[in-house]
Image (tube, rainbow, N blue to C red; front, side, top):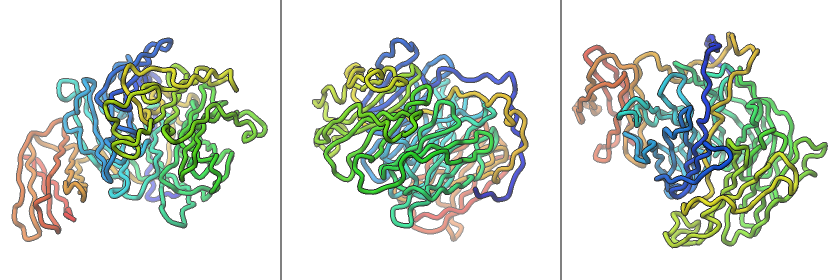
Length: 508
C-alpha cells in the first residue's frame, strides 16, 4: 500500500442514517431491453432507449422507480458514453462522456448528499483513464442534468473491471479501478482504491499483488457481504480477496486458480456469487479462437475447490458468444449471451432488425443458485425480453443497499488516507481535452456568484472565445469545440462577479 500526504478525517455514521432500498430494481441493457424486478416473484421485461453491446449501469429511487441509466455506444476507438433519464431521453448535457467498448466500464454511486449521483466511467483504447461526471436530479424539472462532465482522476490504461462498494460507515464509497498493461512486465495485479466522501475524492491507495497479468479483460465480482470479492481474468486466474470497508485495504484470502496461459478451458469472462456467497458461477470466453464456451458452477465450501467444478452449459462459438452473469435482487442469477450473426460487423453489432431468435431475445436463468448441480435449476434462454434483444452486457450495478458495518470502528474512526485529488468544498476549475473529439470539457464547482463568463485566450493573449451564462447551485460545465483552433497553449478563465479562476490548457 502506498501513502502520501496523509490527511486525517473523521468518518461518522449517524445512527438515523436511512439506507437505500430497491435501488437495483430496474436493469437497462442491450438493444432497448430492460427488466423490472420490483416484484421479486415476477420480474417483467421493460423497454429502454439503450442500444449498446456492453457497458451499462442503472439506479432507481428507494421505491424502485428508475432515476437514470448510463450506457456505452460501442464500435469506435473512442466510443461515447451517454446518461439517460427515466423518460428514456438523453439527460441534459448527458452525451459525449469518455468511454470504451468493453463491458464493466461504467458504474453509478449516489453522492453522499441528496439528489446527486456520481457516474464513474473508463476511457480505453486511444483515450485512457478514469473519469467521473456528476448528475444533479433537481435540475430539468426533476429529470436531472449532468453538471460536471469528464473530470479525469487518472490517465493510465484500465482493466475492464470498474466497481464501487459502500464504505463501512454506510454513507461514503470506495471506487476501485485496475491497471492494464499491454506488454511485459505486466504481472503487477495492481489495484487503485479511491475514497469518495461527502466533500472529496481522495488520491488512490495503490496495492500490488504481483500474481496476475494486468490485461484489459479482468473482472471484480463482489461477495454479497461486501467484505470480499473474486477477481478473474481470461488468463485463467481466479482469486478471492478480503476487503476492509473501513480502510480500503485489500488482502489475498485464497488463490483458486493461478495465472496460466494456454489453458483454454479457463478463459474466465464474467462471474457471480450466489446469495449466500457459497457458490460461484463463471462464464468462459473463446479467446484466442477455440470452439467451445462454458457456464461453470464452483462450490466455494469444498475442500478441493477446483475439483468441485460442474459444467452447467456448453455451446459452440460459431454463432453464440459468452456474456455477463449477474445476481439479481430476486436472488436468481441471469446470464446474457450475444448472437453472432456476422452481419453487418463480425460481432453483429448493432443487430439488423431482422435478426431475432431465442438467443438474443432471452436471458438464461439460474433459479436456485445456492443449490449444487442440477438442483440449481438452470434454465437456458428462459426469460423472454418482450421482443427486445440482449448482447453480452448486463448492468454493472453495485449493492446500493449495503449498510454500515455495525459495531465496527467505522462507526467513529480517525483514519489516514491520501490527500484529496478532487476537493468539492472550494471553487475549482478542471479541464480535460479529448484529442480525438477535439473538445475541451471545462468544469467548475462551488462557484461564487450568479453569472459566469468563460474566456479563452491563445498564447499571445488574443481572445479566441467568449460566452456567458447563469451559475446553477455553484456548478458550471461547458463542452468547447476546438476543431478550428491551432495546436498549442491556451488560457481558460472563468469570471463571476465575486471571483476568477484561471487554468492552462493544451490543444493537441
